[in-house]
Length: 144
Image (cartoon, rainbow, N blue to C red):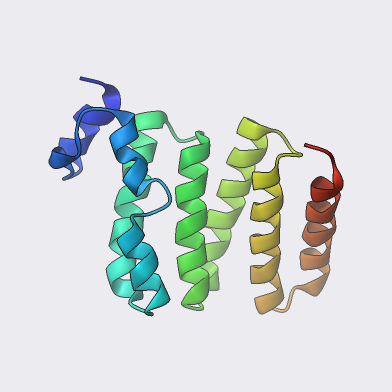
């Protein structure tokens, strides 16, 4: 049994199967979390996003890009709720993981910068937001 499989039962996902691929339905949050979030059912989405994050951290380690994606998704949820204080450290951690794992010029870094900049704008921190947006633009202009 793989590491991911052994973690499923520990986290309450024993029916998912033994491999990391079976975690993929929880990668960016189960589709149901996206539906809950779109419907404004944040209380229903949040625990699923947190479980997804826990699975990825235990299976892959805290510095893996899949963990960064889960952190990012939870930050987006908190931002949608107006809980900017909870969202910001998640955006920062997600960005740091993406930069370390994928490099500073990866498209996922640009996406993370854009979303974090949007949060900064929501909190009236225009100057900080502009810096992140300019960096994201520079990344997007580079050839893949």
